[in-house]
Image 1 (cartoon, helix red, strand yellow):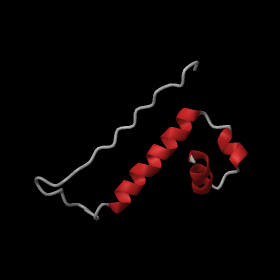
Image 2: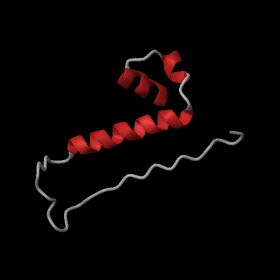
Image 3: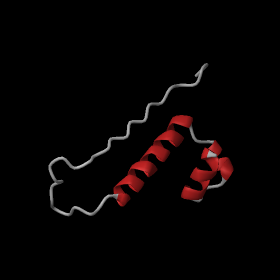
Image 4: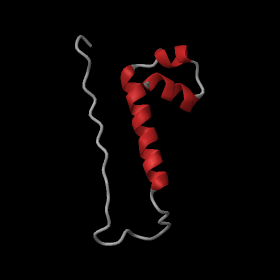
Length: 68
């Protein structure tokens, strides 16, 4: 599933994406998620968020595969 998402987002061939290191793939997907989150937020050009506004922090933890 991840492969097809990255292929579609980057326009690279599946073989090129398979050559990526797994952490690089995860970092790319995390970056895409953060950009999508930023795009969903209302524009706040030069204004500070209201007191008590809902904010979310996404934390991605990468656990190495056994044997790596």
